[in-house]
Image (tube, rainbow, N blue to C red; front, side, top):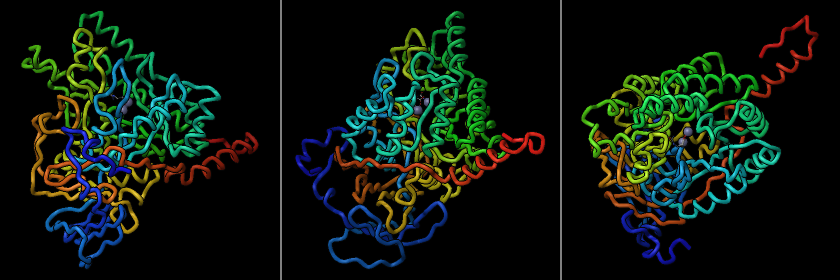
Length: 516
Ligand code: URP
Ligand code: ZN
Ligand code: ZN
C-alpha cells in the first residue's frame, strides 16, 4: 500500500508527505475561473476519489470535504509534458532526475502527467520496456511512454505491434541524429513510418541530419574549436531544416501523420508550416528552452572565465538553442497554431556530468531542464505578452497533448468524469527560478534567476493535494501508468485518402494520373 512506511519512503530534500494529505480524497475548489481549452467560466469543482465529480457554480458539500477558495484564480487542467527523459542512459552517463525527483519537480510546477521515451536495450523494445517499467516504479504522478526505434528487423516490427496492442504505447520516435548511437537511416525511417501507420501509432522524429552533424563536428575539432560554441556551430539550423523536410516528405510519401519533436529553428518551423498548408498532418512541438532562451551567452565575453564556462555547458542540447530571433518566431508560430503543444525535453545533467566535455564539446551530455519551469515560462512568455489566451494556454500545455496521445477527456480537461489533475494558478503572484529552490536533483538550472508573473499555488494530482504553500507532499510509487490507445484524431480520413490513391493507381494508366 502507498501508505505503508510513509515517513521512510518520502525522500528528504524533495518534500514530505503525511497520511492526512494522502487520505483526503474529497476536495471542493470553490469560486475560481475554471478554464478548459474551449471555454472558461466561474464555477466550483468537486473531486472525490481521484475523479472530478461535478463542475458548476454553488456546489454544496457535507462536512469532511476539504474546501479550497480559488476566488480570483484560474482552475486549470494539470500540465501534460509530451517530452521528457527521466533516468535515461545517454552519452555515457544517466540523467540526474529519475522518475521520482523529475516528477516531484513537475508537480511543484503544475505538471501532473508526462510522457517519457523508452530507449530500447540493444535494439530490443521488450527489454527497453521492462527496464522503464522498473525505473518508473518510483513514480509519484501519472505517466505514459513513447518508444524509440533504434534498429530494424522483423522482431522490432513485431515488437512494435506488441507495444501498441498490449503495452499501451501509441507513439514511436526515430532519431535522425546521434550518429553511432541512436541514429537511424532513411530506409529504417520509411519502414518505421509504414509500421506506425498500420498500427495507428504516431511517428515522431528528432530531425537533424546526423551525417552532416558528424561532419560539422569534425570540422570544428580540426579548427581547434573544442568549447561548447562548437556544439552550436557544428549543427546549424540548415541541418534541422533539411531533416525536418526529409521526414515530412517521407511521411507524405506513405501518407502517415508525423510529429516533429523539439522544433528549435525557423528553418524547421517553416517546413512544418509549408506541409500543413498543403494539407499534410504534421505536428510541431516547440520546447520551452527553444521558446525562451537564445545562444547569446555563447558569445558573451563575460562567460570566457572557467567558472562561467559551466553556465554555457548547461545550454548544450540538440538541436541547439538558436540565435536570437528563432525563439520569437517559434512563439509566433505557437500563437497562430502552426506549432501545437509545448514540451520540455527535460533531460538534466548536473555540473559534474556537463563537465565531461570540458576539453571536447562532443562529450558534453546533451540536455536541459524544464519540467518544473514549463508552465510558468509558457504563461509568462505567451499569455502575459498577449500572444496566447488563457484557454489557449490550457490547450498548448495540456489538452492538445491529451488529444494527440488519445487520452482526452480523461486527461486535459476539467469536467465531470475526468481525472482530478488540477492546478490553481494565481495570475497576480510571481514565480522565481533558482537551483537553490527547485526540486530537480540537479545543482544547476538553465533558467537561473528568471522570474515573472503568475504562480501555480496548488497542484492536485489524482485527487490528492500534492503541492500547496510551497510544499510538496509526494509518495514514491503512487503514480500510475497511463495506457494510450492507437488511432488518434490525425488518423481520421487517412484510410479514405489511401483508398482514393489505390483506386487511381488501379485505373488504366492513360485515363487517370495517380497523385502522391
Ligand atoms: O539534447 C537533447 N535533446 N537531449 C535529449 C535527447 C533528445 O534528443 O531528445
Ligand atoms: Zn531529440
Ligand atoms: Zn528529447
